[in-house]
Image (cartoon, rainbow, N blue to C red; front, side, top):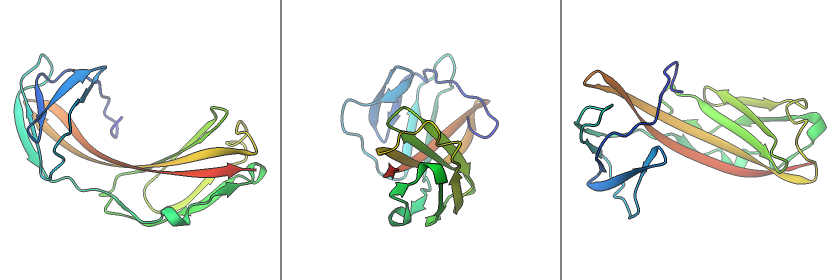
Length: 168
């Protein structure tokens, strides 16, 4: 979900990204070959039943994250987990998603607006196993939203950071 918009993955017809043809399978576009990732990004779509034909070029802005070294590496489950997330810049007002996943398929998630304090309470960590690794994923996403032929299209740029946290 982007803001309050709902979205569906549909075929956009023939799609090329920076002159590389992308294939639509399993509700997503991908390539079997290396793709030119140069900036600006150049999109070219043929018309489909859902998406009008368009050509679009843009310079995405990417999050900058320099706080990886400040993330915790251990957690006492009964105390919860609180840490300061810092080093995020160039976020354009978009949110930051955090997901903590344990070896026992336990998951706890948070969304914050940028730098700040993150707390996973003991209750949120209740299903996590002790003496096991948990994995913190920080997902930084910037969106650019455009309208083509009355259809709203969101272009997203995603950067994820992962770290391992030992749960005591």
